[in-house]
Length: 150
Ligand code: SF4
Image 1 (cartoon, rainbow, N blue to C red):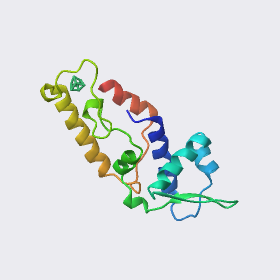
Image 2: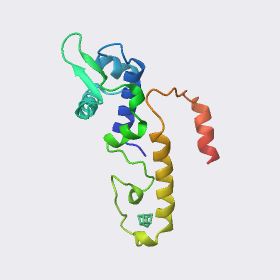
Image 3: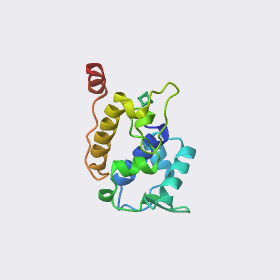
């Protein structure tokens, strides 16, 4: 699963994408609207600014904005920058690869082979979706039904 930090980063970036072109957005605006602890958000935005994805300005009228247009940022890029893993099991992760304690040989493991395909399909989907894309929220009850169907 995505870490809390990565999920916060995605929400913060969606917020900045919605307000792209409107000048600096105050940290408190992002924190309050997206329900992200302000201190944690500062760390996340400073990390994203190191990659040039976010720009900032200090001072009374300061704040944060996207350093590149939302159409040029894919969800896949964003998750990779936050070092998030797209794999369901650590041994299928390309960036955070780990084997479990009771691992069989990776080269002989069919579960890993299957999870690599899941990982690649997930990456393909996220690399094709951009911050500029319109994504409609799914009602909570509908999301739960989908989980029960699995
Ligand atoms: S047993 Fe298979 S799925 Fe589990 S860590 Fe090892 S390679 Fe991955």
